[in-house]
Image 1 (cartoon, rainbow, N blue to C red):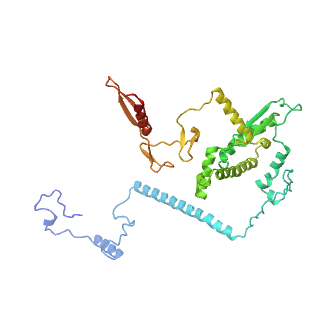
Image 2 (cartoon, rainbow, N blue to C red):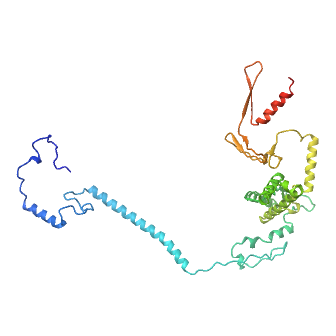
Image 3 (cartoon, rainbow, N blue to C red):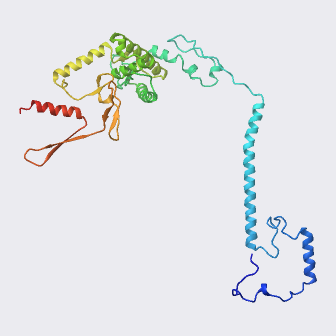
Length: 389
């Protein structure tokens, strides 16, 4: 801080403290005594290591009531914060301590149950065990549900019941043809949900006194099954169907069908589906194949279905035509090169080529667009070759 202030003193002025030569006024005895007491208290004549900064009030400065109130609020807020932090630390340490103590205490070991053994002969009514059996202390689905379904099926509880005269009951009839799962793999949650709803409706109709039938079956899913079997062959043996030959490949497909058909039916039984298994069907059974052939022949003779040339969905890998339901469509942002089975080079897709043909005797043009440039050009050349010159 400047002590020789120039406020109110022009530059080079003769007056001011620096030019004063008069003798300073004498210091009183009381002032001298105060200075000596202050020197003795601090030990030095300099500022003592920041004691004043730590909270000692500056001599001669008194804080206002507003400043004091602000400091009190700040101190109270800090005290509450410290209290919350301490409580939080205690809460975190508490469970850990209790957990350690709990581990240290010897507790009861959980009883390990042996595997449940079903002692009921197949098809007979379940042999019940006493409720104090270890497997019945808590719900064990294997112990509770085993043997019952075989007995229900043997008793024919899921077959349609008719009146005494062999006709449908007076309450009416209710039939659901179960949507046949494909033998391409296992059942999933979608099947479980749909089948549960169908079973609820069938059981409600049965309990309402109606003649009911829930008809089970499986679908061969020809193209899809062929695809998964070929993928399996390539993955496990590194072979194609051409490497196996027709007869061996057909045998492999039937082995696949047998395995997954049994798995599907076993899953439906474990879910408790009230099917009439005596009527189960497979889409390639002899009677169904004969019915399909008969239907197609009749429709062809009527002219409802016919053979003609048309664009088809061609599978380059399986070398067969696919229905629209078996095609996975993808969207491309523009020109894209895709790898296609049995093609050495990638195929360009996502491009539309426009041709403008001038109209004779006019300045107008006819625009034709195509995504199949090769076929279009070949068609134009063929038509030009067939048109008389």
